[in-house]
Length: 634
Image 1 (tube, rainbow, N blue to C red):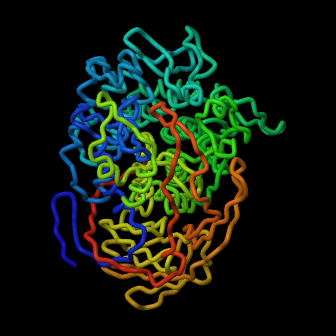
Image 2 (spheres, helix red, strand yellow):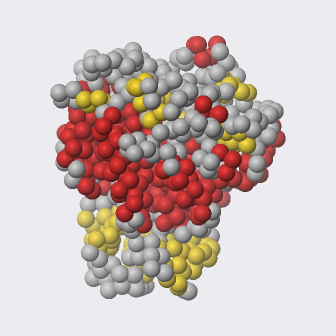
Image 3 (cartoon, rainbow, N blue to C red):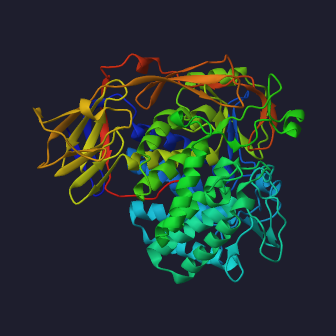
């Protein structure tokens, strides 16, 4: 093993199983995130990209609200992967935001010299949900590099949010858009789906957008945790009270009753756009953790477990919208969202699986429950299947797509395929993705890669806890995972004196065996964790157990017929049926245009996983960075 070290990162070569490596996926995501920035558009990241048209193109329509997401993801992904690709662009993307933060502590999405934004927003705007996400991004960036600039800027932005909050005696709230002319609502095409159609009123409203409350709550709670700012805590208390008080109005966008004996408002149940609803739930968890509020933690737990009932959680497939099975007829009649048979199946969304990973991981870290198998199955399956990795499949989709002539004022067709490798599709059916993505999904899924990677293991005082059997390097030990080919994990210990390795739900405890430097050791279990003790550093710990293969069938009510999964452990190795094309023939994307769907990007092409071991191996350069992160995604 060849090793090189600088003041923060150690690099070395290692021969490892050629199985899912989230650090490798992080490097691909860096390509896409930095590729989304364009000098012609002031290094602002694009809002949407189409790989389903001739020619493929990226556009900046409605650009601005998702710009903090790549800034959040990039330092986390670089710490995971060690990649320095396009590192100079990170600072330019950061400058694209910070130059528009005024002395009032507000980040204004400005329209001057930006025709793409002038046509959609009309005037300069501050969105509290977006400013909140920027604060979270800066606080995590500070955890990575320790630069005090990010703390100073996060504090200034928090003061800006405090200044424009709308408080009453007990609660506080925001609307979507704070403009130079005052408060306004969201004028975008998705406002109704997001529950943002309420008019601005002088007194306490019955509802606001979940993101308008939840993301600022998350940011302000995080800021209080690191600063002790009493004014921030007071606002967090008020926002949380508003959110819980108006949960029913904010959570139920359509009049579908719950069972009469179930008080849904007290258990975090909701309906509507899943990602927009989880904005608020994630903010509540950050707040409850800081406030040590057990009741709210349980509320978030119940909300998560309720959301997990929709779609096919076994593979991380969650519908974009929780809605009645019958589609909205106005969308069908307008040809905005239409299948060939006249129905409107509810496809999944990348942000949904990203948010569910965040909730499962952070509920587990907070000690509210053990959801590590959820994180594992979501990550191994639909999270990584959302990522664009194969140029040949993209080119085939482009070749079949409808013609498109770009508008150079707000679009580009320069090197689009190369710049998009590593991005994350926004949605699809169980066996197809639709050929466009929005920065909302690419940004959130990129952070979810980190959430899953960070969850693989934790360390404190010489004790390492391995929660997920995925490949991971660290300063304390490396995890070499042979799953799903073989039921085998090799832990290359560096500094730990005790290791706890979690047994997956599907594995049989009595079938485990463990060797330390080739010698069998007796098994000692602490709940679901195998304890390996009396280590001195430098040992190879080999844990083996039989792989378990199952065939499982699940129903998606808006799609015809059930889907059958062939599973090895938590990994989908095959899925059926496999229709010849995506279900939807006409749809719209986040740039607002409706278009014909000619082809899609096939997923779960995993024939090599189905046969089982032995796992292939490869030699790679591994990278370790020492920073810890606890609550980093979403």
